[in-house]
Structures are given as structure tokens and as C-alpha cells.
Amino acid sequence: MNKSIWWWIFFLAGCCFLMALLCRSCICGGAMGITEKAASAVAAAPVIAAPVAKAATSLWNFKDGTAYANGVDQYYKFRTSDFTHITPVSGDMTTSMKETMTYLKSHPDRSLEITGYYTKDEENKSILPNLGLARAGNISKYMTSLGVASNQITTKGVLVPASGIVNGILAKGAEFTFTGKVAADGRLKTIKDRLFGKPVTLYFGTNQDNINLTAQQRTDFADLKYYLDNVSTSNLEVSGHTDAVGNRDYNVNLSQERAKFVSDYLSKFGGINTSRTRVLGSGPDKPVGDNATSAGRAKNRRVEVTLR
Image (cartoon, rainbow, N blue to C red; front, side):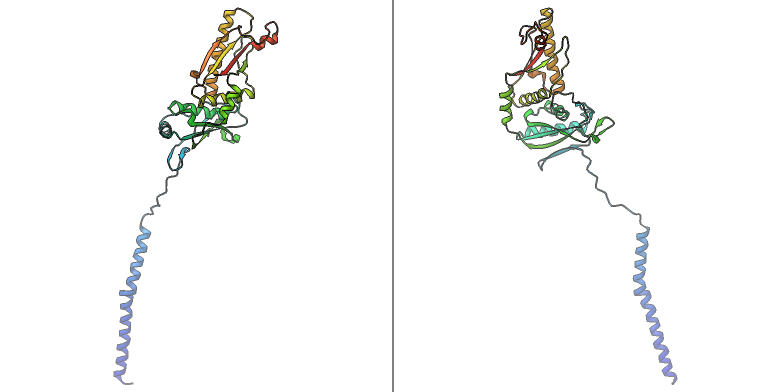
């Protein structure tokens, strides 16, 4: 092989080598360099967590479909066997309550149902059939004090597991649901037919003012409260009576005190405003039993609560 051929072979090999180097540094190497630099930059950059949406924390919610929504980050709480709430109505709670009541007042076709909760082991100290109903009534009383018509608020009691009570406190005492305004129903007529002018009678021992209610009397008082809430012209006559033993003036005064006690009792333990009760004391003047017998005298020591 002559020298010229070898020279061309070396020349072509050198060109190939130079082209390979050029490709590595300018094309392949450049792209790789960019990738490596980008990877380095990502590795060196600080890690920033994606924003996390704030969890909804409102516990006590008022929501009327898409028309209205409000809530506050706490529940009404109740002590065991008590229906007087212990959650102070202040701050955000006051604002939420007032806004909700404003909504109700501007929408007379809507009602708010309050469901009060209670457990089976709690003692019912109210005049109503269950403690949940009394708790709901207590909240309703506050709401009507803000100017909402009482017939725009309905109440009910629901039994819940005892696990809801922790350290003597029922942490979630009520729930709220908007509904259409409850129309006057057959219940009002039934209550009127059964109780109008017909007294619910409470009996007292000699010189005693404590009250022990039967299940039927609790039902009667729940009906009376419902009627008062829905018939603005109605009221209760609370009249006290005694037996004929002792001084008449003393007995008249005692009968008035008993009637006043019952009126206050209905207010404190049933949410019936004292402005809806008329207190009377008749002493021994209207007996229903024979004062000559112990059984007759026991019947005369009474307070009658009558729907008028």
C-alpha cells in the first residue's frame, strides 16, 4: 500500500475523532450539562410544602340550604342532669346568634328546629317529658329574647349514648335545622279541647312547697307550653288553695305563695314566661274535698294551672 493511501486513512480517522469530540461537547454534552445543572438546582432549592386548606371547624351550624349559612366554633354544653347551658353566649357566638335571628325575622316563612340531647342516666329536673326537650326549650327562650317569634322555633328531645358525657359535661347539647314554618296543626285543637279551662292540679303536703310531677303532668305542661308559644292571646291562671286547718288569713297568704312558687317553677324549669301566668290565692275558700277528713284536706292543698 502506498504512502498516499495511508495518509488519507489517517486523515479520515482524525476527522471522525474530531467530529465525535465536537458532538460530545457541543451537542450531547451540552444537553447533559443542562440536565445536570437543572437537577442540581432542584436538589439545592428549599422544599416548600403545598398550601393546605384550612379545615372547617364550625361545630354549631345554622344552614338553610343555599340561602343562609352561619356557625360558631363551639357547642352549647350542659352539666349532667341540668338543662341550664354553661357555654357563655359571647363573642363570635353572640354574633352568630344575632345574625341567625335576623335572618329568621326577615324570613317569617322559615322555622328553626332545635334538637336537645340527653342521656338515659340523667335526672330530669324539668317540668317537661325529657331533659333534651328542656335543653332545647332553654335555648329557644334565649332566641325568642332576641325578638324571634316563638312560633318560628320548634323543639324536640333526642336520646343519645352516655359516652357523650365527659367529666360530667354533655359537650354537644343541641343541633339546629331550618324547616318551613310549621303551620297551625291539629295539635293546637287537641290541646284546647283537652286542657282549656280544665286545670292541671299539683298537690302539696302540709306547709310544703315542693312539686313531684307525674309523667302525665309533664306531658300536660309540654302541651301547655306549645299552646302558649303558638297562641299569643293565651295565658295560664295559677291559683293556690289550702285546707281549712288554721288561721284563714295565714292560709290565703300560703295559697298565694304556693301559686307564686308554681309560676316561678314553670318559668325556671319549663321556660314559661311569668308574664303569661296570672297568680291567684284562694286559701280554704274553694275546697274540692271534705276538710273533716285527712283525704279531703289533702285534696284541698293544691295549685291549679289552667289554660285560659
